[in-house]
Length: 82
Image (cartoon, rainbow, N blue to C red; front, side, top):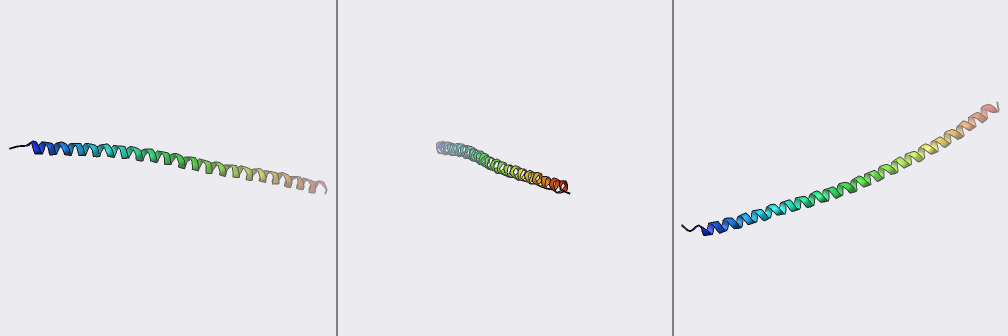
C-alpha cells in the first residue's frame, strides 16, 4: 500500500496547523498591545479628569475661605460697633 499521499497530506495539515497557531499568537499579541494602549489612554484621561476635579475643589475651598474671612470681618465690625 502506497502511503506517500497520506504522508504528503499529513505534512500539509501540519503546516496549516502550524501557520494557524502562529497567526493566533500574532493576533493575540496584537490584541494585548492594543488593550494595553487603550488602558493607558483611559488611565491618562481618568487621571486628567480627577486632577481637574481636584483643582475645582481647591478653587471652591479657596473661595469659601475668602467668604468666611469676609464674614468674620463683618461680624467683628458689627460687634465692635455695639
